[in-house]
Image (tube, rainbow over the protein chains, first blue to last red):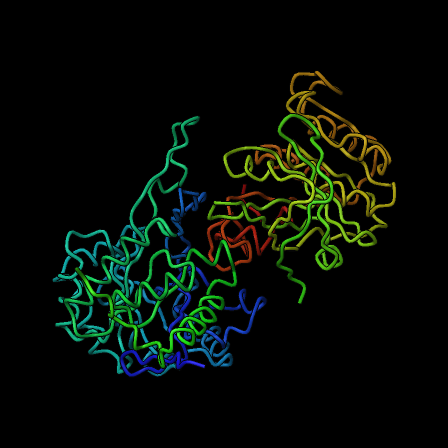
Length: 303
Length: 255
């Protein structure tokens, strides 16, 4: 039995597999399938200061080896999250990563203040949502703004802060360095890639929002490349995500430099994907005589 | 746990009309748990997103669910290629289902691919329900005999008059409302049809439940993609077809 536990920014996770924000709600639905306490952690649905209604439907489209979504951060607001969801999640024993998204930098700080006294284990700053008009990826594409938000949040909470980065930039390592310099305890990447599909019969975009975020196996090689670049550029831990569907993908992502992985779109194809990845990692480590999962992090040997 | 996931054998496949397929899957646990109006989420080989398909018939004794799907795009085309003996990966049963009181006088209204979920529902009324079915044309008409076998009366309409009467299901509903005192109307079909059915139900003062359709991903209420406009205490918001529905009281919806 290999040691699957990982420590990221002072938080101990029993294994490195975390459902990604927006694909797992607050865990209740998947608790119908399995004990969600088995998971390393859960990055919960992106939370905003006030309730958000999201974008009009259709909000999803199939793509080759993936999907587009344009949910637009629909959520019941941070107070509801604190009152209704944190106690439930706490009861499952899983590590809670609160994913927060603001329309202004001050929104992030205000949510971080409110979450500071709660049982969340870590705060993930979503500065990379492609589906909202105010904030979202606009914050994540400017190193000054991304750094500024990180600084404000760090001053507002003692919780570890992880910044979720968008791939829709020229140099993602530059963004990672900018938030590291302002005190980010970890970075997670990649959020979705902006995409579009058109129904050739109606000449209308499939998504009512016209454009949306691409995820699924189609983005995996892009995610591996970006995780590798960022892991080489910063000293803080990197949490890798983007198209991970199997334990082999998880191993690859960790070899690229990820200390843990998040699993998102794969859940829609296979609700058991995260638990199957945990089991697969365990078998892989045992079969290869590797004592702990952290031993494979960043072990790629580039040419 | 009421939710079942697994690979279930396709024991019977029929082409009901061009592009419309009936699948009977052997899945005893899911059949035992299923209610009329619920749906299943089928994995499509080589595709990322599952396809939600409503349950057409439930046979608890045989341990089977019958599904009827229409080929609409690449995903459903792939599903239609399954053959008897193949196993299909399915999550079932999902969603809330219709609220049924078998003592009530009910009308079930179906349009196109909205017809199949009305069949199991109609059967729950032991021969007393009225069915109004609408199709584009004769070539796209399905399940007529199944409804005739379990309903007090079945009215059939096509857009072009190639089968049944020429007209829309709302013409049939008007006819029914003029001659029967209905307690409840159930409907599934295109949004414009649902809108008109609800308008008729409201003006007749008859309760109405409708089953909605939307593009889905998780199918269980976690990803929030299958939004539909709902209203509570005068305030509008986006609910989700997979978890808040697919069946809604017409008063909950903004169409």
